[in-house]
Length: 195
Image 1 (cartoon, helix red, strand yellow):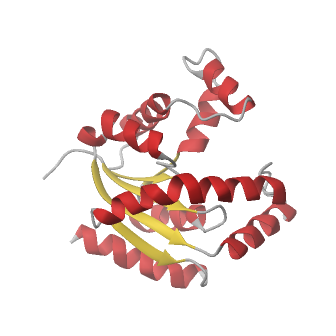
Image 2: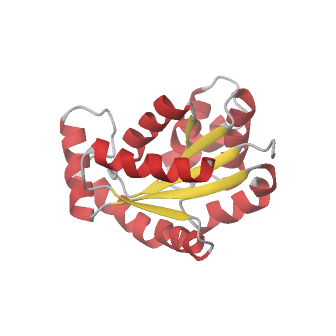
Image 3: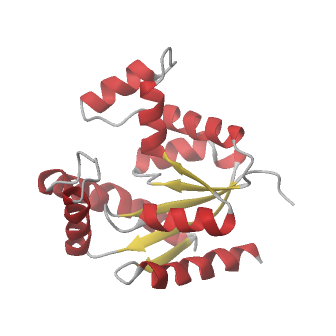
């Protein structure tokens, strides 16, 4: 049996339900949920952080933080956790992320599969705008930011999903249904690999 941490990449457009379903997976299976974005924001705010200034620079300028830093933060979070299975939410987002992961982390982890929440763009926008109106606290839950995020998702993240589809590692879940209906499919996918 491998002692390497097991990984499930969780991908989908903004508002596809990644966070909601990750919470359900954590509650049901005890997995550790790691959001690349949250790890970067947390590191940026740490006093005396090795990477804080650099992360701040990239976030302020709307550029992508170097993937080696993101991988390092994911690795540190894994080492600090007692969990053996990690949900990595919103990563890898683009080819640079994928190349960095393959170089830095692929040998240190066991990728179980990619959980892809497939959701029509209109539904994604509607959910994010409702989330923003309900006071999500997210500055990017507005129409202008959403349009940019969706373009980025279509141009950068969909090719990553295609990359893993060729390796037969993608489980696609229709995320237009109720949270519980979606979770039934998610549980089936997880139970299938845990056999």
